[in-house]
Image 1 (cartoon, rainbow, N blue to C red):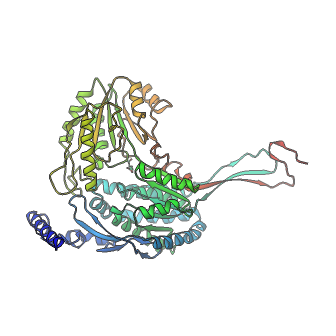
Image 2: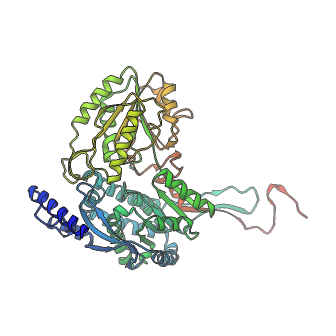
Length: 539
Ligand code: UN1
């Protein structure tokens, strides 16, 4: 009864709110967004009120039903039925079986199918980008941008499908050939995070596929609709090519499914993107069975600005890196190290730039800054700001939650903290930038490296010697080392990932493909003699 009256009160209040907003039609709030006329485009992605969250050539799902919410207003979008452990068992068996077919397809032909997946994504880029914006909460250009990353990595993988391979090495024995052969690992488990619900799967999926692997994807439960929509696009391409759909299986689920994947010997490589805390548990579970993992964990990325820097580059770079995606990229700049001679000027200019940020609905093309993904993220943000104050920081911009519906907080700048304050060394997945004042290059490089994480880093300078010191052995210890550009927004052509507590994995471009394959060193004797290596005579 109490529940019912609460629901009715909420209903009346929300109805009033909607009627007050001329943008939205007067519908009951209990109605899922998918049933409202302005969200009819969700159906172009094959989504319904209730969706099946398991795909293994057939759609299904017998687990919990999860509703996903729009972070900009916390209204329910639609529902996805997740996997239970029986679904998992059935799906992994089908994926293993599908692999047998896929592994026999020549790599350039696999590339051709990946090319078709890229094309299918291209055709849906706007609508899929809009779903990212609606369900994850990032602004539309960034939502479309991450679908573009998937498209780009498909193109990249198509080329790669004709290039992967190993060398023929000189054998020390006459009549012998020494060859490196690369084979797929088999089944690649891919666990992705809410913040890049399309691109991170794309980097893994396109490369894993051309290498000859089957994939088993578990996205974040809060972005389940995106996982379903992406899988529908891929499934159609596989089915049109008469390939088993289970080559790209989907298993929507929570921690129980993730843990099962980590412990399962049938998962030959587990690619995990998420927090350092969970990543460590995953790594230990995989290592326990001598499995292979590829970890892309937290960052605590610094922008280091020297006295000779071009401030016309620094201000927009810091703005994009710290405020883009509302501070929810693992490459987000969390620390801004300023030379003491320019500290005050940069803080002033940056605060002015922050004041220009257009906050609004993420799907509105005028908006530059949207909500955090969840209510819990708002709580974490407020807690971190409190900690920063307690540890001696001054909030010179922002610091508060916004008084509007949805999970909005003010982009925030904190100055005056010691470089080694515990909050500065903590990755809070929110738009808080800690500004630190340094005196020397040595000090700045040391501060860049003193955090546990090692993902991304940037310096701003015109000094050529300093640039090469930054790239060299005593420079940045991160996986992404930039000069005069932001810490975030890496291109797909390079290997992406970081050192230390970031986990050491590399995804996407360059030779990251090697992680998705196993290498065999093959020696073939084509002579009639049996010379042993190292000149050993054993007679
Ligand atoms: C992530 O935040 O998990 O470099 C990945 C970037 C993006 C990828 C971020 N290309 O910011």
